[in-house]
Structures are given as C-alpha cells and as structure tokens.
Image 1 (tube, helix red, strand yellow):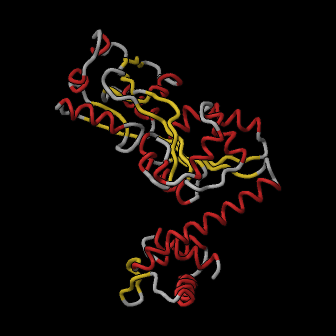
Image 2 (cartoon, one colour):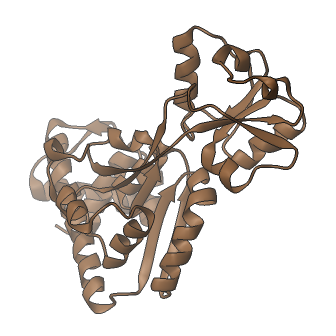
Image 3 (cartoon, one colour):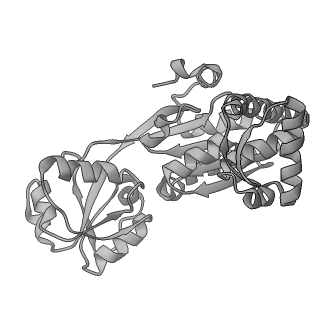
Length: 313
C-alpha cells in the first residue's frame, strides 16, 4: 500500500469516476491510475468501485466504508508535511486563501498588507469563486482558509467561525426618484429594474428571500459577480443597484448615491472556515488573527480537532 494508490482512490471519487480527469490531476496516465486502483483492491481483498465493463460507475459498500479512512490517512500525511515545515521553516511557505471577489477586493487588502509585513517570506495565493467552490477547495486541501458568507457553515467537514456582519446598500444615480424618499420599501425598489449579484454570490439569497417573503416580483435585468461592474451599469442608467456595504464604503462610483437598506434585507455574516482535522501553520493562525481579531488560536485549534457534533456554531 502506498500514498499514490490512496490518492488514486480519493481523486477517482472527486472526479466522479472519470479516470482521464484523475490522471490529469495526479499528472500520470489513465492506465497508471487503473493499475494503482487494481493493486490496492487486490491488496485489501475487496472491490472499492462498481464497474460497468471497464468503466467505474460508483463506490461499492466496501468502498464507501473505506473511503473515509483513506481521506483521514491522506489528511494526516499532509498534516505531517505541514508540521515538519513548521518546525524547519517556520516563516516560509504558501498560504492559500479561497474567497469571494468582494472579500478579495474590499476587505482583504489591508489584512494581506499587514500579514506580508509580518511574514515577508510567505507567499499568498488568492483563489476566488462561489461559496460552494470555496468550501470544496478547503475540504480538498487545495486552500488553507476559506472566507465567504453563511454557506460555509453547511459543510460538516469544515469548521467555520462568524467574523463580522454586513448589509446590502442601494445605489442609484444622482437625481433618481428613490433619493427623494425618506425611507424606501421593497415595493419602491421593485418599481425599477434591478442590478445585483449572481445567484450564490455576496448574500444574493437574502435579497431574493426578502422580495419572495413580501410577495413582490422583481425585474432583475443584470447580474454580476463584481460590485464595480454592478455600479458601472447603474451609472449607465440600466437600473438601480444592490451591492455590499463594504463596496460602497471603499469605492462608490462617481455620479452614484447610496441609500440605506438595512431595514429591507437580512444582515449577512462573513465566515472563515478551515478543514476539520487540518494542521495549520503558525502563519495561518496569524492571518486569521489579522482578519478576525476576536478569534482566538486556542479556540480555533480546539474546534479543528473536534468531531462533527461539536462543530462551532
């Protein structure tokens, strides 16, 4: 039994049993992957995969039982590598952060700047995507830390921590009729074309939920991942924008005015997540402290070691 065999099993399930994709991930050949799987099955004396001819189509009952053990073995091997680097090269390495565009654009610059000053020999890799992809990257070990909205709390293989709250803000061109209202309502907004985030990004679900619960239909004419893009199209007169408050605080486009909407939409919570059971380097804890000073390293470490039933709320 060797780690390449274990990786072949794990990646086969992650790639939905497509051995060509597995070979690309492991930088090997498809026959090589097949051989690794077959040799491990022969050694264990059980079949791990269901087959249709030569094609793998799923996990057997044995495979479903053994896969979590393989995952734990590979995670502990990665923890061992991280621990050895911690003691031999304490302040060098790469810290991979998976996050959304809004966090990377408006919140993380000050954190990264302070972190780089404290750890100049540590490289930072920022990966940007949806909360679901962010969770997948952290769970697979492709990212050390995930930062996104509440969606990160839905995965048992992650421990996540609330960091701060934020709200959505309405942005409209100067002179817009909404600016004359003392307090806007959902019906007032729905009277105009709306421009906001793609589904799955930057608290969009809270926007949709508010209108749905009020029984109000909307005309969302354009969506984007980027607050800057949303504001650009609002300046062109295509509609009224709904953006994250931090975008307005840092960079409100010329010709636009911000309108408070905290009474219309539920507050969003930015969460930070790490993989359950992972070994975090000391500089990863330092980054977390820069991002969320109220999070204590001892509490994070205890949560990482806890079982699912003790997951942080």
